[in-house]
Amino acid sequence: MSKAYDRIEWVFLTTILQKLGFNEKFVKLIHLCISTSSFSILVNEENSNKFYPQRGLRQGDPLCPYLVIMCMSALSLLLSKLVEHKKLSGIKIARGCPIVSHMMFADDLVIFGKNTVHELENVKKALQIFGCSSGQEVNYAKSGILISKNVHHHLRNMLVRFLKVKSISQRDKYLGAPLFIGINKNEVFSSVVKRVCDKLNGWRAHTLSVVGRVAFVNHMVTAIPTYLMSVLSLPITTCDDIEKVMHRFIWGASDSNNFYPTISWQKICLPKVASGLGVRRMKYFNDALLAKVGWRILIEQGSIWVSILKSKHFPFEELL
Image (tube, rainbow, N blue to C red):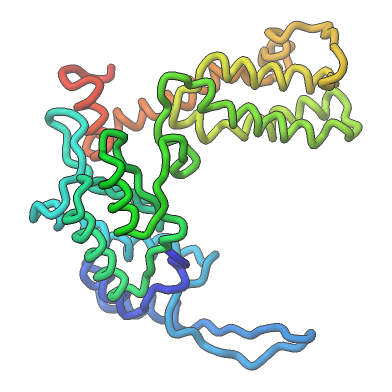
């Protein structure tokens, strides 16, 4: 969605809150919170006259993310109705798992369906209905369509022209994670190693002690792959490449010279209570983050994503 916070109609928001079951007093309080704000512009070091918005939410307001999610739930319900009336097929990745028609994260949306003009027309009409009601607009410049490689190129081009969006490839990403991994995992995750190298190369010229380098690695560098590691299992080769870059940086080595460490990498990665420096081993760190996903599977048994994973990977047994 384009400028999701700035375009929300207040009437639509209050209607959604009422439909969700909030009492009238609460709805009025929310309306007062979002409608009594005012703005002024600083021009030549002087404040202009105040003006009052007629729609939209202020970014940075603690309430705004929740209000946006409530508004987007109307679009989610609209797409679910399309599936219910056989106007959108969605996907079903395994027997016994629910049909997935869309995935939504704040104002980012992925819709699944068949490669037919009829389904695209239904989706486009649903987006137009939602836009007219809520004030939202689809950002077609940042949208794309992923079509199976088995589809004929004439049909592919026709679908792209119909939606007026770009055709995305299997190498593109969604929310920072690759859409497809494929056989060559090292190539897919090479960008993570490059980001770590770029982060460290920016500090090559700075004078840092060994303690400073270790602190920088522990607090800054290990944070770069954390997001991907929390949802995907990185190849061992990628983890080793990241550790090699970290190892060279700690000992002050550059690309043009060799280095001769006096302490093994295994000892450096030991906890501080065991006379190490507490540098994380990437593979173990990855396993620990993925273990949190396993814990969520155990405690969120009623979630749709848990039902899909169980139907796909362990349909006849429990995780533990």
